Length: 378
Image (tube, rainbow, N blue to C red):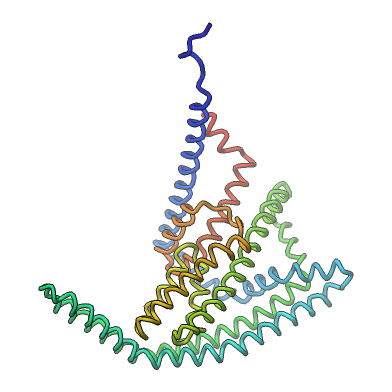
């Protein structure tokens, strides 16, 4: 009989194998992150990003049109399956899309413009409220024998500088915003036209495969289908959730008396695109402004922010998004830190889909060439 010591402990062996797999995954993710950081640093040193941004600015209408055609293609394809000619289906879907856009802009833009003006006119009084609030806090702390006069003076100077900058730069910023807005409308309008023509013959984009050697066609198509499904679910889910968050937040903040509720609802909807920390950013802004109005409005704004986050995490995210991106929370947080450091808020918004796309590509390569299996065998 074999000694008990010679027996294999399968439980411990399975635990070691499981731990080894987790270590390999962490190592794999770490290597990907380091490669991304290295590429970004090289691109920044060579000023490649500025060159890419200039190119993207020139061809932006094409990308806008391609995005519109990509989003609307399933509806046109559905009508095509119902024996509706492609051109007729495209006209119907595109007309519906433009009518919805017009209604949204017609309703939201004037309201948003009015609320922005109202909020800008309130900035001096808000700064005064902040100053009085800070003064009250410092007076209470000073009763304990702590001298905070220097801190109080520095805070007041910073607030005065902020108020002066807002006053002096506001006309310039408004003019620049108006110019950029008009330019963006022109670019978007050209993009709409491009999107219409692409949508009419969207299948012709597949002919781009002709420039790729035939032996790679199957892999490219498989990878394109995976990326298309993942990105489409992500964009559709993100837009629906952001719209829901904007509406719920605007109604909630309006009920508790926060000024310009539509503006802050829009801010919450946009920041909610950033996973995990985005809702806190939008909520924090609303709470801070709420406390400048009154303590009660600040507290109620915090309650609304918390309630909206619960609705998002408990109802909207599981119901609409589910496991769309299939990314570990740690991976998402690392991506947010990296892209946020290099590209700010815009980088944080695009971090998750970019990382998800890279994961799909890497997994596809790994499945084809069995890289991880070869590493495990070694």
